[in-house]
Length: 141
Image 1 (cartoon, rainbow, N blue to C red):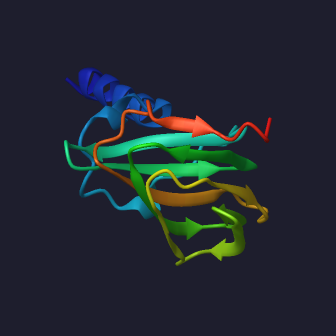
Image 2 (tube, rainbow, N blue to C red; image 1 turned 120 degrees about the horizontal axis):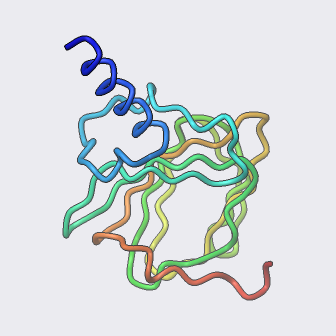
Image 3 (cartoon, rainbow, N blue to C red; image 1 turned 180 degrees about the vertical axis):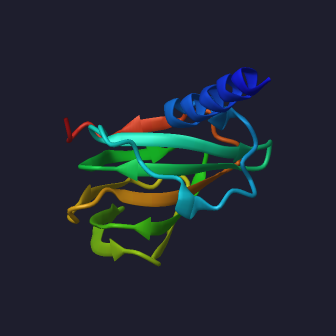
């Protein structure tokens, strides 16, 4: 029995780390306990919850998010950790822990991380987001 319990616990931890678990509803999760991967190259997206009205994601960014727009979604962003230079349409401003950004539908936006730690944000997209309406700016690689 102890061996079986150990295997189940090990599988749970492996799923948690590999992001396989995040297809489940984590709508009541403490976001402070979720850490980004140690080997983060640039972006890690963790799906927290989703329904027909909205999708919620925890996003870690080490370097930047290219300029892009969502053709049929608005996005609300709350900064949990880190700092960056955020571009929203034709304005650029500094963001840091505690900042809230509202990105209207079809509005160009992106961020360059300026802190030594990755940017950690809560992103809420409405309506439900499947990643199919993201359009990158042709002026950026």
